[in-house]
Image 1 (cartoon, rainbow, N blue to C red):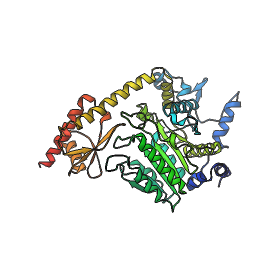
Image 2: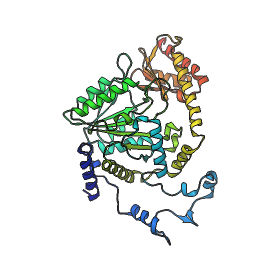
Image 3: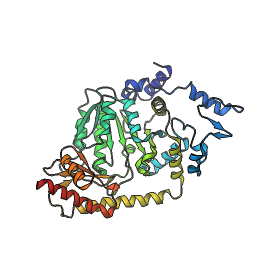
Length: 432
């Protein structure tokens, strides 16, 4: 094992032996090189006052070489904030500003010990880092039966984790914290589990209420007290899009510092929060009571980044940072929030109007981009195909009877027409 990796492992063990036990084999072996091109370039950047011939970019004059056909489209920004490589951890100011934003929007983080967010190539990359650091073959990865299908690829196919699902909802349509608890306690003989919490949930658009949140945290704490090391990942992709009386904070805050056997990891980003899907700017943040643990986990995260993408895109980090610092940011974001809330409320009013009879019910939704219909005795895939081929309407079939509809991408004035068409499609198939 590389001496740098061994030292990071010792630092983690000294701070929290349980976190060391959570690491995968790759997680134990990975490190960020302290000697090499990056470190020598960084040293030269500070001391090479005459000539700096270390970094793999081309320069011209006093700045990075660039093409005018590109720069003329981006003239509001300095070339130095666009063309050079961003640091592997991301632009330092962006990391600090995002941390301030996290604290402002999650008051439960006040007084808690957590690291500086590391920039990722959006949220999927952050989840992939978690999988690499903590998932070995056979490790239990626990998340609800209604989920984003990429979890299977990220934790199951790539890392050979053992996927454990539990029903998302109870019979009274609440979050199934007892199902989570049972799935966790079933891992006692293994001593380890990775839990993925995704609120607002994709595909249902559901965020638990305050009491449900407490029950989720209690279930995780009970597992830790039973001797199970739990990596808890809060996938906060749609954070902030809370339209009703639900949790309005990430559970990351309640989990931070809760128990030595619990390692909270927050995955979030500008992708959906700031409506910049193609910018691919996300963040990964760890919580621990021990600074040495936080520093070592950051170094291992940088090792994963260095070994995969090297660093994230610089221009989009600059764009996001500039937006976050703008005096108009909050007002413009609120305007978009109200549009999304109006669409969600319109859908709920339509579904509760009675005009569609009893051909479907719907899962609770109060946040995010989506909602799911539960079709009564009808194949979701059959309806999806029929709607696409006969009406030119695209939806997503999930499982046997669930149909996901993204109200996020339909103007409010067209929502009734959309659901009328879906209803017509159901009638077509029932009367065929």
